[in-house]
Image 1 (cartoon, rainbow, N blue to C red):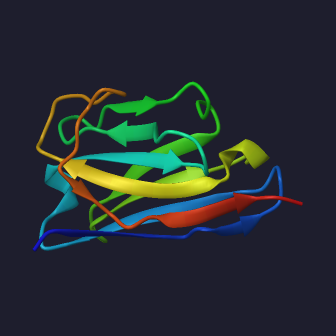
Image 2: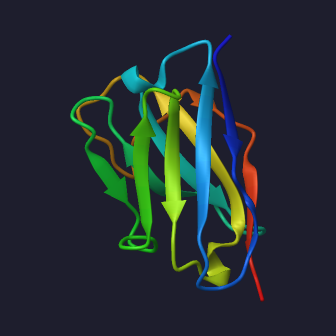
Amino acid sequence: QLQLVESGGGLVQPGGSLSLSCAASGFTLEYYTIGWFRQAPGKEREGVSCISSSFGRTYYADSVKGRFTISRDNAKNTVNLQMDSLKPEDTAIYYCAATRPTRYCSASTEYNYWGQGTQVTVSS
């Protein structure tokens, strides 16, 4: 069974950093397009970033561009989201998701497999 597990969430002060990791069991992430999403209380789910299976093309939402970096660690079978210069409005549950191989990804990419999420809280 294909499973995704997020880790790395926690409490951080504004301006701080966190690194989230999305690990897979049952399949190799390298061959899938992977997305990171977040959902804050009372708000709709937002696509944060994604990385395509082919050529590693990336997408970032305007709200995180220049602060977040998505990357693959194929040796560990993970996709990571480095989050810097965090703001209180980044507080949310962060989810990773996977879909079939694609040449590129965007905010409209649809995903088949989802993790359970990890809480990120940015507060002083």
